[in-house]
Amino acid sequence: MMTTAEKLCDTIKDFPEPLMAELIDFAQFLKGKLQSEKIEGMTDDMLTALKGGLEGSQTYAGDPVEIQEKLRNEWD
Image (spheres, rainbow, N blue to C red):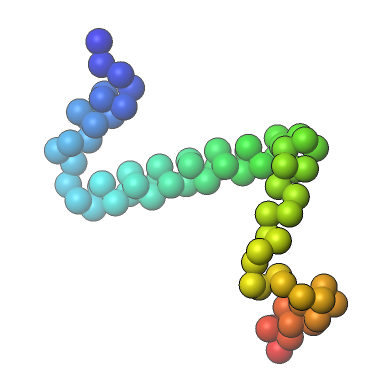
Protein backbone atom coordinates (compact mmCIF):
# COMPACT_ATOMS: atom_id res chain seq x y z
CA MET A 1 0.00 0.00 0.00
CA MET A 2 1.36 3.42 -1.00
CA THR A 3 1.74 6.26 1.46
CA THR A 4 0.06 9.59 0.75
CA ALA A 5 3.43 11.13 -0.19
CA GLU A 6 4.11 8.27 -2.62
CA LYS A 7 0.66 8.69 -4.19
CA LEU A 8 1.30 12.41 -4.62
CA CYS A 9 4.72 11.83 -6.20
CA ASP A 10 3.29 9.18 -8.52
CA THR A 11 0.43 11.48 -9.56
CA ILE A 12 2.57 14.51 -10.39
CA LYS A 13 5.75 12.91 -11.75
CA ASP A 14 4.81 13.58 -15.38
CA PHE A 15 3.36 17.07 -14.92
CA PRO A 16 4.89 19.79 -17.09
CA GLU A 17 7.22 22.33 -15.42
CA PRO A 18 4.70 25.24 -15.31
CA LEU A 19 2.19 23.03 -13.51
CA MET A 20 4.90 21.85 -11.10
CA ALA A 21 5.63 25.51 -10.27
CA GLU A 22 1.94 26.03 -9.46
CA LEU A 23 1.95 22.96 -7.24
CA ILE A 24 4.98 24.25 -5.36
CA ASP A 25 3.32 27.64 -4.87
CA PHE A 26 0.19 25.95 -3.56
CA ALA A 27 2.17 23.66 -1.24
CA GLN A 28 4.05 26.67 0.17
CA PHE A 29 0.72 28.47 0.68
CA LEU A 30 -0.62 25.48 2.61
CA LYS A 31 2.57 25.26 4.66
CA GLY A 32 2.28 28.96 5.57
CA LYS A 33 -1.36 28.50 6.50
CA LEU A 34 -0.44 25.59 8.75
CA GLN A 35 2.30 27.65 10.41
CA SER A 36 -0.07 30.56 11.09
CA GLU A 37 -2.63 28.18 12.59
CA LYS A 38 0.09 26.81 14.88
CA ILE A 39 1.01 30.33 15.98
CA GLU A 40 -2.62 31.24 16.70
CA GLY A 41 -3.00 28.08 18.77
CA MET A 42 0.06 28.76 20.93
CA THR A 43 -0.39 28.54 24.66
CA ASP A 44 1.24 30.84 27.21
CA ASP A 45 3.75 28.09 27.99
CA MET A 46 4.79 27.97 24.35
CA LEU A 47 5.20 31.74 24.22
CA THR A 48 7.21 31.70 27.45
CA ALA A 49 9.56 29.18 25.84
CA LEU A 50 10.40 31.81 23.19
CA LYS A 51 11.43 34.34 25.84
CA GLY A 52 14.97 35.59 25.37
CA GLY A 53 15.24 34.25 21.84
CA LEU A 54 16.70 37.51 20.54
CA GLU A 55 19.14 37.97 23.41
CA GLY A 56 22.21 37.58 21.23
CA SER A 57 20.78 39.46 18.24
CA GLN A 58 22.91 42.33 16.91
CA THR A 59 19.75 44.04 15.65
CA TYR A 60 18.12 44.18 19.06
CA ALA A 61 21.22 44.73 21.21
CA GLY A 62 21.43 47.94 23.21
CA ASP A 63 19.04 50.48 24.67
CA PRO A 64 15.39 49.64 23.88
CA VAL A 65 14.48 53.30 23.28
CA GLU A 66 17.32 53.72 20.78
CA ILE A 67 16.27 50.53 19.01
CA GLN A 68 12.70 51.82 18.70
CA GLU A 69 13.96 55.14 17.32
CA LYS A 70 16.12 53.34 14.73
CA LEU A 71 13.18 51.18 13.66
CA ARG A 72 10.89 54.22 13.32
CA ASN A 73 13.51 56.17 11.39
CA GLU A 74 13.84 53.37 8.82
CA TRP A 75 10.55 54.58 7.33
CA ASP A 76 11.67 58.21 6.86
